[in-house]
Image (cartoon, protein in one colour):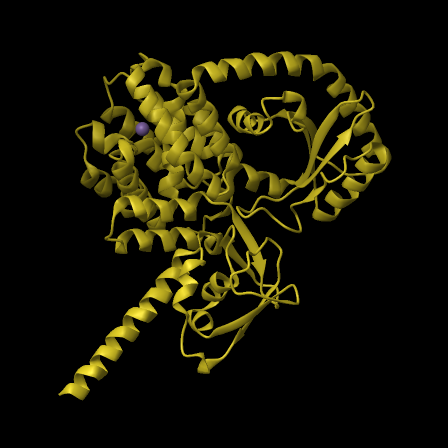
Length: 487
Ligand code: MN
C-alpha cells in the first residue's frame, strides 16, 4: 500500500487530521522496520499501514492512526517505547505500549485465557482505543494468516474467535466482530466452512436476479411515496453467524430468512417508521418478524427496524431500515462514539461493564476456573435493558432479578430492598427480568440488610459482591461486640 492511499482515506473520513503528522509516523515506522519481511514476502511496513488504514476507515482520531502505524515498533525493531515517547509524546506512546502488552497475550488453555482477559480489560479500562487498534491489527493478521504454519494459524484463529470477537460484539462493533469470525472460521472448521460456501453460492446465485428485481420495484415504490432515502441495497449475512443460525435450524437453509437482507438507509428516525409503513403496503410482512430495535435497542446499542416480507416472486426477505448514524454505530460501535475533542468516549455509560470487570479482575484472588465461569457470564451472556419508573435504563445480564436491579441502582437500595413491582405487578425478588420491564423497588431502612439466600439467585457479580461484603462486615462487627463483652 502506498502512503497516498492511506492519506486519501484519512482525508475522506476525517479531514481535520494533520497528514504531515501521519507521514512522520509512517516515515518513522518505515525506517524502523527497514529490511524486515513478513511471512507473505511483503515488506513489513505493509502490516502497520494496513492497520492504520483500517483505523482511518473507522473514523479513528489522529493519535490512534499514528499509534497504528507505530504499533509493532517497540517489539520488533531497535527503537523502544522510550524512543516513541520522546518522538511522539505520551498519548501515542501509551497507546503503542497498551497494544504491545496485549501482544504478549497468547491463547494457551484455560489459565492463560483468564490472564488474557485480565490484561485486556485492564487495558480497555485505561483507554478503549487500545483494543480498537488491536482489532485492526488482528484483522490484518487474519487476512494474511495463510502464510503462517498450521499450528500458529489455529492458535491465532481460536484466540480471535474466543476472545476478540465476543468483546467486539459487546462493544457494538458488528462489522469487526463479523470480520474476525469470518476470517477465523475456515481455519477452525475447514470442512464446515467449505460446506457452507458451497451451499451459499448455489443459493445466492439462484436468488440474485429475483432479488434485484424486487429491490428495483421497491425503490420505485418508495420514490413514488416520497420517501427520502440515501441507499437501498442487498447485503449477505456474515458466514460464521449464518453457520451458527443454520446449526440452530438443523442445517436447513430454507429456514434462514435473512440470508440476504435488504438495507435501506434514510435521513431521520421518523422517516424510518414512514418507510416501514410503505414497505408493508408494498409487500406482506411475515407474522411475528417485525422488530423495533429503535424504540428498544439491542443491549449492545444496535438500532434499526427489521421486518421480514414476502416478495412478489414468493421469496422471503428481511428488510432493515435505519438512519446513517445508526448504520455507522452498527458497524463501528464504540469507535463511532469517540469524541475527538474531549479525547474520551461519550459511550461511557455503556462501558461501565468494562470498568466493573477490570476491577473484578484486579481484586480476584480465588480459583481461576471458578472465576472464568463468573466472568464469562458477564461478558458473553446476553444483556437486557430494564427501566426505572422514571425511565432510566439499567443494563443487566439475562435472567437478572429485581435484587440485581436494586444493587445496580445503589448499594443501599439493594441492602434495604423489601419488595418489587414488575410492570405494576407485585412480583418475587427472584423473578427473572426481561428487556423492557419497568421495575419499581420498595425499600425499608429498618430491614437491616440483605438476606443471605439472595446469593442463591442473583446474577450479577456486583450484587453478589455487595451481599458478601455486608455479611463479612456484619460478622466481624458481631465478633468485635462479642470480644468486648468477654473483656
Ligand atoms: Mn501487528
